[in-house]
Image (cartoon, rainbow, N blue to C red):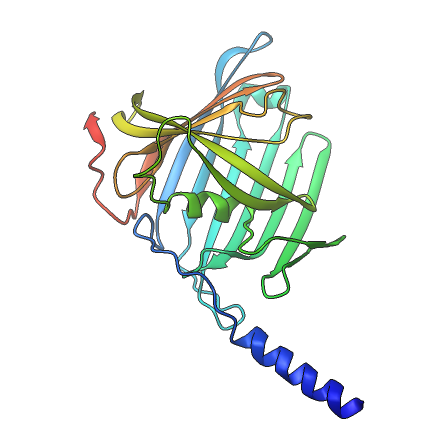
Amino acid sequence: MRRFLTILFLLSSIVACCQAYRSVTNTAFVRGEKLAFRVAFNSALTGSITGGRASLEVMEDNKVINNRSTYYVVGEGKTTGFIELFYKIHDRFESYFDQEALISWQFNRRTRENNYSKDDQVTFRQNDRLAVSLTKIIKVPANVQDILSAFYYARTLNISGLKPGGTIEVPFFLDDTVYHSKVIFKGRETVKTKLGKFRCIAFQPMVATGYAFDDPYPITLWLTDDANRMPVLIESEQAVGRARVELISYSGLANPVTALVSN
């Protein structure tokens, strides 16, 4: 019996080591890409004010996890100025996701929002379809994402056959829960920002209702209709008001910005 169990263990290890992962063609982003955003809020209490900044950066690091090269992405958001008298936010998210399969291997979170704080580190055991956080071990679907890797994976998707109203489903893991978010493709639009007018493709991702959102589709996201699929504008209807996140600078892109109409 012991010999049988030993052989079974060795076979399982070989299968795990040699497991085939999906291969995703990525021409949308590269290491070194940096995006900076201005965050404005509008509510009955404050009116319209610029109250925060955010950033997304694909770091130069190539951390090898399970013998696989990864992208390391850092996302940060922080309130600034007058709005901090009412609500203070300083969040930092980090994701290590597979360079070829664009699936998540590790997700770090540091959230500070007024009196609420949360720190977490999630290790994704993709071979076992498990997510191991600081508090739980959760069964997850194949190719599961964290919230950052899901966004970068979505930038690589081919939507040539998708019509307005069509949906894309992206599973992601957050707060010890698996979400199967449906993303609605709204169509093509031209949007105006401080950087100029951009031809864009517009999406509405489904979110969890409750604390911040009353509507399951409160967010509209505009990405450049070019090879970069760069986010230029996000508008969000929240329970306490409206937020507008606008791109104010970019560098290190993978491709020329051909969606810019005028500036």
